[in-house]
Image (tube, rainbow, N blue to C red; front, side):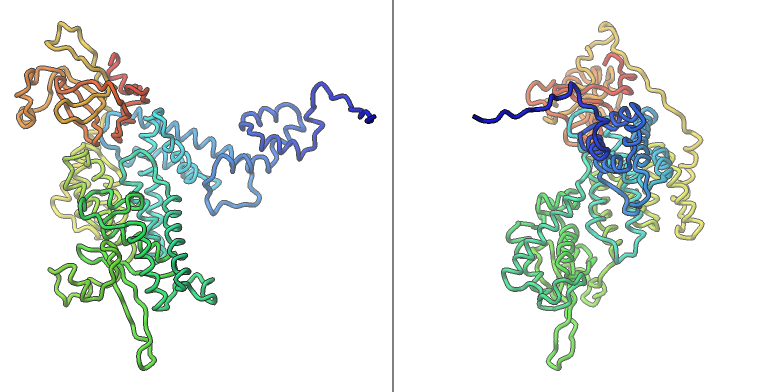
Length: 594
């Protein structure tokens, strides 16, 4: 007969105060409580108050909520509760400033640098080295949200990410010693700056992809017995052994081109996606300079130093080593890599053939260039694409962004500065930073200041006196008797163009066509049955363009309704409900009964 075991009766309730301090700390920090819950616990009694403010609890909660930290942040003697409170407060202030931007600049086609000054001023008030990381993580999190909500907050968040965070990143990068500039980091900033999509490029994922490719090549070398000897394998310095370096090049070519399928894009060479490092890695195609940046990054991970060669019209890389001559001396040896053409290895003479119009005597074109000019050339390539296609896909804004980026990389470029001022004047935008930059360069003798440049600067200064806040003009649907044709469609409706087939969302309308006679004739509006005497709609098209369409040319989408991918959607709409867009508060002021 088994003995009965006596159990002590359980209390009706467990008193937390009977638990050791260490257990209470674990409960408060690792049980998923919100920080407000921890604060409420701290108000219950003196003992729980003391435990609730334990540095260990707030260090855990802080690092759990935020993952990005400044490397300069001290690890010792840090009040983690104050750090948590500061980051939380800063996030609320950033969110408030984003809503203010929407209210203050909704009616502006282009934002000047002073629009971002309140956010910049917030970052300057940083006592804990947390501001930049807080801004980056907050914006990254809201833009990583793929739901069709908070679209206006995301829209202005992307603008701040570019004009505040990425701008500071690029400044910091180019102010370092040129030899320490990591080209793929600069390429990521360029892609993040100029890609029109609302999401933020996953920088860590880019580096992981490059690391992964390098690991595959390292394994290939090991399997081929071409890996480093054990006595040199632990060094972090570049390898100079001629045979190892050439074996690495052959291995890169085998893995990158033969196995993974990377190739130069000959079919659509001037597609801007060929210049974005994330797109080149995903699509496995690009132009010479973007493929060279990836090739160089992989080689560096395998401890092979390659030099960028800014050859006109066709970017190359160079491997410079030395071999043992017949007399036992070191003989310099160089080979050029054509990353666009499968990593083909070229001699000097073969490389010169790539640009036949260049004299063979001008061997200086095959000399290495610095890292900053490489990034400048990448941006110039994109700027030229946007300039040549400014009439398509609404590329004017992207052209302006590329010029602003170019001003950071090449501040002495007076022609680009003049071009940028002309574009701002076209939009009637006064930009303090552009004027101050010009005045400083004139004072230091960097700009020669041509007459046309001087006139553009003077015109922008005049814009400062003309600045005024534009009130939104309210548009209401009038009684049907006032119009020959009803305004049938509403703001936010998803439509299809009957003739051209593009899908779009309506963000504005006019009772009748308000464009010039020249435009009417060019677009053939006069041939339409209802001509100009019908409602016309401002629409954001799925190809990235903004259009002005006649009512008879539009029809509502009824099936397969998907969100419009246009980057300006968030400027006008707050959310998408699966069939149509909900106007944000500023658009509702203009179209109250939309």
